Image 1 (cartoon, helix red, strand yellow):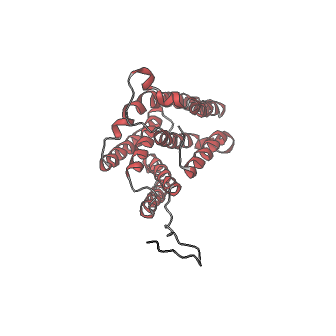
Image 2 (spheres, one colour):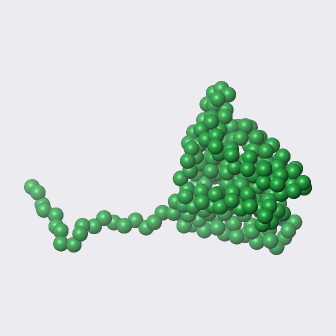
Image 3 (cartoon, rainbow, N blue to C red):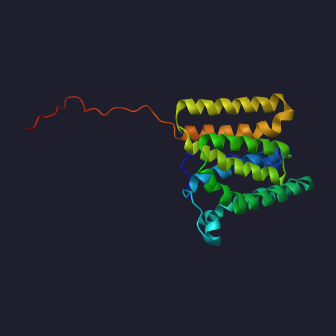
Length: 231
């Protein structure tokens, strides 16, 4: 299970490093960083898992974990960092572990193949509902992290269904990221819904940039060479 989007993978690694260093830099941003990590990790998981049907049996239910068990290690590190950040962050560590257990053992096996059958307009509606669900939960809660995980899965399927790599789609995702970020900064009351929207749009932008199509160059013969007409 390896992703193919180099720019997005680099951003994922950078975000993980920032979250692990958050107690030393800005402990107050740790819940938001963990939420962004849930979204991008779920996006990468859906991208790396090529199967659209769930295998039968318990082993099939957790097959996405068995394919890459080391993928779970960063979550343990993130929870440990939350514990180190201070007593007030102990609940955050518990919320991270509970949310990743729900996401990996329940949310992903249930909705991953179901979303593959939903049209793109329906996916947009599901993403909107998940954003509303995020707005109803306080930052740092397990329910919000679990919805962020589902949001990442839905965002990946939405990207896979769309015109990936096209300039228009890239600019639209970038405009969405900038607009949502501006709303989060100008209206703090809207941060609970604008922040995950900005994160998802930014992830979509990086995904588009990772597969941006270049202008095709037509094949030409070197100068001085000619075709010989054969009868």
